[in-house]
Image: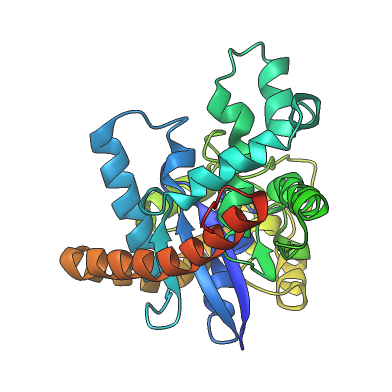
Length: 316
Ligand code: AMP
Ligand code: TRP
């Protein structure tokens, strides 16, 4: 029996190279070794996408992204959350064993509160739905970027709590956070994020790559421009890069030009593959449908076990 790996991404906009190195790449690298579940969390994305046309386009886009990075649908199960009602069903069950003060310690909630935002219930309960996404499939590992560490801890705590109350039901998943890419920096040196306007989109065209790299913030006092180097280091090891950067000390423009070429070499094959998939939408949709069917079987078997444990099955 293969070990199980699961991770999810919200269909809430274009993916960037931070998503790729922090999470998506691990799915491809491990798809032969593990049973891989690649989940499109469309219900999670509803907190930011509330336009049906945009939602449809975004879901389709993540599907194409997964295929373009090289996930093999014969090996990986690519599926979407809204196809499997067990996710929201289990989230409810988890909500009944979780306290408000516990969820109020979540970073996402605290950040929203600090900004005096009016927080919707979905955002507050977000970690419960994520725990359900994970625990229905009994994964051994969940590759994510460092920003998801706390959500993984909440999923583990919730599994333990359920097991304590109702008897052993859930396996505790391990977060898999790759050390060197736990927080991929953006063009301004902060964490690369869809909401900071500092990304390098994963499928960017050459001109866009150029524009993004030229906008990387540098400080004239540094010999080695650290923000340029940090992104470059995703593509080439320090042993190769350091001599180059030392040779070109202070020559920011040349270093940026090198980075543009390296990014283009890395992105172009995936970009081309994505364009190929864009011409094969019906096939892509069939992959999603079949993935959801496979996942549904696993989720409904787990749900039957859960219902038995909590005592809502009253067959005699
Ligand atoms: P999101 O952009 O929130 O949909 O994130 C999708 C996945 O990418 C999650 O596993 C994140 O932890 C990961 N991720 C997002 N931004 C970064 C980043 N800058 N560095 C590393 N991983 C990231
Ligand atoms: N919260 C994750 C993010 O914003 C997305 C997510 C939802 C997820 N459910 C998941 C990630 C289950 C891993 C496993 O990036």
